[in-house]
Length: 555
Image (cartoon, rainbow, N blue to C red; front, top):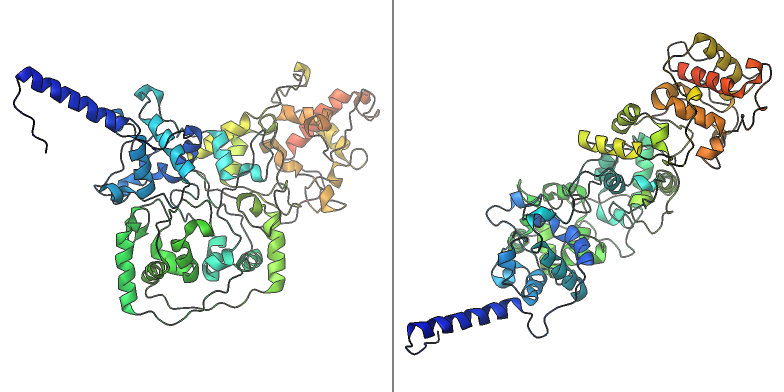
């Protein structure tokens, strides 16, 4: 410590003030060569992927993983007084080298091997914004349950066209899934999907693997296809049981790198990453060792940081994680089942959520949801989202179950119900549904729908499979009363091409003289209303016409 000579009291105060200002200036001013020029918008995206699970979406240190970090809680990044003392260079070093580099939190990992210098600067720039906001500004990353965001995160645009929403890969890369997982586990998972990463594959996203209600044969074919997707490098064999010393070394390295900050092991630890207690039943040891050594070489988008673990330490950690698990060999994939699985993978739209270099890209396998708010009843939609059923059994794709919460269901119903055709002209009052269905109108509609006139059962499902190829089939009209808005049915019958350009539904009422003259004196509007009333009656007991075709059962 430097000793100053004795001075008058006023002089000593002046010196202390100067030294204090100098120290403050050194702390908050960037040093020579300090990182500058980061982009906070890019930094926000990085923050969400790598940091928010511990530090929270708003930076207050309240992320979903924070509660599991014992007394070593994440730093509150909104503390403006604390962050005013720190230079950008200091923040850069903490993010790059981790908490241990500055004798800080042992749970703060180093990101310098995972992120580029430019990305680190972007993160610094964004972290700066967190401490500059007033409490009234709210968090920079919204945690509100937005229907559009939820639809995006669940992968709905992968199968459906929904306005401007673009499909996003919300699941893990399956390019080499056969090198990663074990067949027995994969079969169980496809039968009954469940969360692997409590914080989500993309942290804080609400994405999840849906339940496609696969048959035993479909599960087997899909598993064979995925197990055939492997790295070109040869997989190591089961090998012999490793020595106990290597297991002990792995336990020590596991503690050294504070892996339990994110992973649960032996019932304790974080929830940001997969539970490691079941890793020996789920993953293959060769893949785990390579992933620990260089996560980004296996999955460029993984939130797992590159900790600089060498090959020997990675093998030791893997040995510790797989201790007690007997080595097992698996038979080679069956070529016929692989081919069937590849078709199923494409038909279900798996490539929309998962990257797979050998699979087809996006396919339109679900209905266009444009105008769905005009078409669907909210109460039916709510039930359908919770318990999906088959609407179009001729399609190979199917609506999966997402295990939605009540709040998520409400948000999605509100979002889809708002998808309306604002450009559509208002329906004349005389054509609006008044809640009553006269029996005489039903009988007229039944005659119109018969083979004598419009022959609706030639395409629409109701009993036996309709005539023609499955590509020409149409939805079951018996579901219409519960599912469709009566006024939308009228709009649809008047001009189906206006609502769905390119639809295979014929336009029967294109002008005032197009309806059958022998029914209701050729009055097209009254004929349309009679058809609407007949369609709405089909859901009631005994409402379906005699001999109407029905759909074959579908799992």
